[in-house]
Length: 202
Image (cartoon, rainbow, N blue to C red; front, side, top):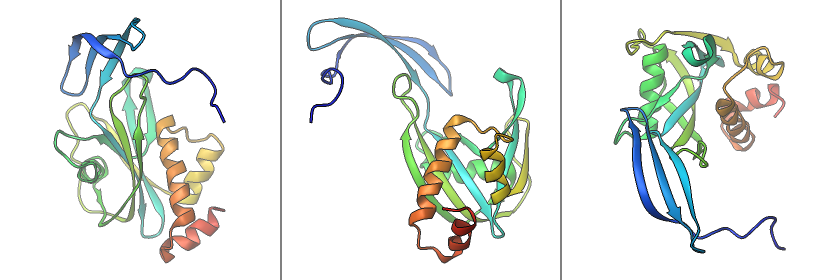
């Protein structure tokens, strides 16, 4: 059966690429492409490193969260521990580092929930979402200059209730991580997660 919309165009040929901004954490370039039919168009591309986030659960199924000041919205926001992948750093190593630096928590039991492009219309990077089990407090935070982050714990089912009722507003990208977690809980045979799956109604 034919799909909706026009056929997918062939990849365009880059006629010109202009670097507009280059910072350690992002870059912005403007490119002019010629398509297969000879037409041209300009595209703006945001280059970011890959991102990582984690649903970190303690042995008694509290979730580890961070309250962090986000200047663009002038608010303290509750989020999952998250961050950027350094150059040549594996995503798993990056999120282990971020969890430890932001909260002082560590885990020896990690699971990749999924990975996907963040916003392929504009950005080059991917986000990798993880589950960490048996998270435990192992030291003090190691925050970067200018970061204001307060770690806290919340019973996981209470966390789900607050998200469901709109009392806790996660960034939309992290809600996708919760969807991946839901799929993981439905298919896992891990006996430790069976009661959690049942209590969460999954």
